[in-house]
Amino acid sequence: KFQPERLSNGDTKCELLARSRYLLMVPGNCWTPSQKERARLLFELYPDIKTAYSICHSLRMIFNNKNATPASAHESLKAWYNKVTEFNDDNFNTVSATIYTREKEIVNYFIDRQTNASAESLNAKIKNFRAQLRGVVDVKFFLYRLSLIFG
Image 1: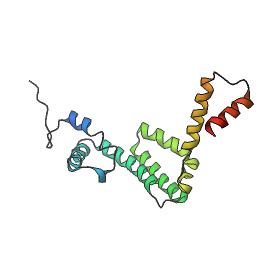
Image 2: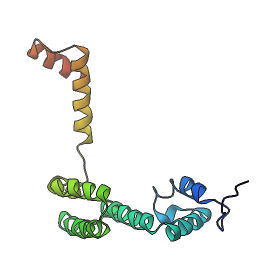
Image 3: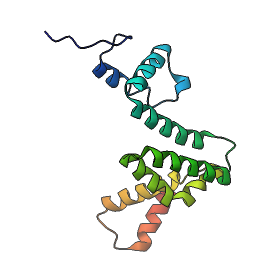
Image 4: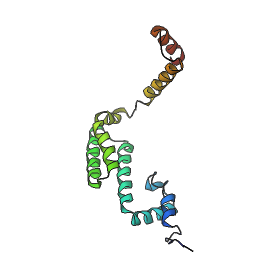
């Protein structure tokens, strides 16, 4: 009968990967002692996961920095681009290219730390309302109804 190799914390490699999903989504200072041990084993066995986690964490820290200005955020993003280029992973390169093309809009977040989420939400509600009506014939009446419902 097959007995998989057990690691020092009692997990098999498959269990280690499955149980490490949550700890890769949160910063290291939020890990429990067992998660710290699991992360240590994971990063020893899979160094690419450690590098990927580091790159994700550094991007997270750019946005969590409360004292960041648009200029400092731009510099931090440039350093982040360099890390992604050194890692040379297609997924990270795609994200990096997307952020690079939208960097001007992204850096504007650091002026007042506001997003356009409320505008996007209102736009989605308007599109849903229009879809329920199956199109708009009378634009003035449509705008009037919108102002009554969402105004």
